[in-house]
Image (cartoon, rainbow, N blue to C red; front, side, top):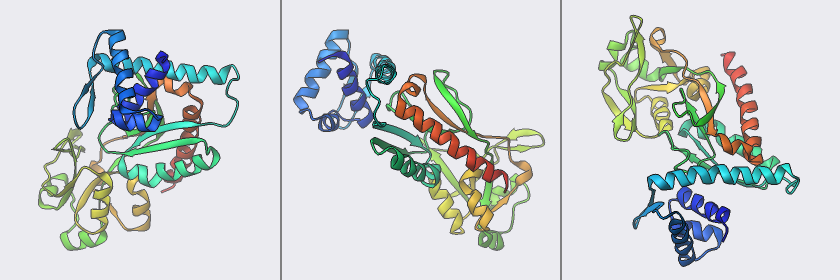
Length: 302
């Protein structure tokens, strides 16, 4: 097999975290997948994956190989389109990562509309609140809040966003409304957990960034769960405004501690630069930017 085909296989093994699943998707037997992977490793004289009974893990050399594979595969797809070998409709997989509540509320409906216009595209949406490794997970595009640390990725701003502490009217009627972050120690708080650690509630107190102490009564690694609990009157939640804007507008949730909220934590679309050369990915990037531009206008009216 040629190197590009092996790169495609390798990318799917990493994305699916399984050699057998990648083989089934591509119509290859487990033996054929193992044989091709061994041939690539022998070609470069180094292991690219660490195999176990439950998962496959990239070695440092495997990560380099995957980064080059992503660029080469993107260039190949872009070349086909540029020279006229692929003038038909958009087609192929589209792997997207998004925070759970943003993904359910905005990205999932967006994908339905995008798929209706481009039935040859196969979207694959991963909902997770942890910051995903785009290269290691073979993700094409990720929606993320906050600043981009990885300079190897491209970032497209989608909309401004701020953090907000919210609670239901019933909770505030029963427990009172906090007037200062120090009051949080006496309230029921709903916390987001990442990698076993409670995420801090960053605020501004006396002109300085601070993380007031909270005592979570309920915790989850799914941001949408915090919203559900807050709506049920279970406590205070620290959320992105975009995730709860509709609830605030409808009076289902009430923002508190507004004078202490920190600045903008904008929503961005991030992706490896080479992926934007792929027509279906470039088309979805433009589609998403347009949709969130409309949403930004709507939120600005709140």
